[in-house]
Image (cartoon, rainbow, N blue to C red; front, side, top):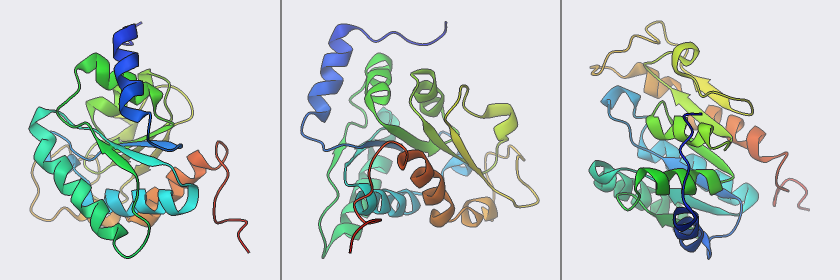
Length: 200
């Protein structure tokens, strides 16, 4: 198996990071190496806020050393959306994980949300249900392996172009937060009771 094997220390580190975070644990990797694979921190933040409103829980922000700034922007977006209401519990471990610690945190998460990235495949290999946003790449070629995953792919005519830069980014705009939320909600609902669905 190509699945990484976190050590006991890696799992302990992951549990220490998450100990104060309420369940369900939603891991989000907002970055991507290609600009055209990045769906956008503001959109991810809208989905994370809806997840908190519906299910409670906490958000785990993931990213590599070169994504610390981008993950910080996502954290600020999520905080800004929470103003005036209850703030979404979150922890930002961007730039603080080795590959095996990333695998452990991803494996501990209840669901993993990102674009078409290496961390998405890592989470899927750890058995975590993933919701993957596909803009410029093909989910048939690059979708997560295993079962229990959901893909939200663009429907624009130039989908799966594999362009690394694009002047319009129509694919990113065409994938709305509502579409991604529907996939995430469908993943979470069998596992966790909704806080709002039965209210009133």
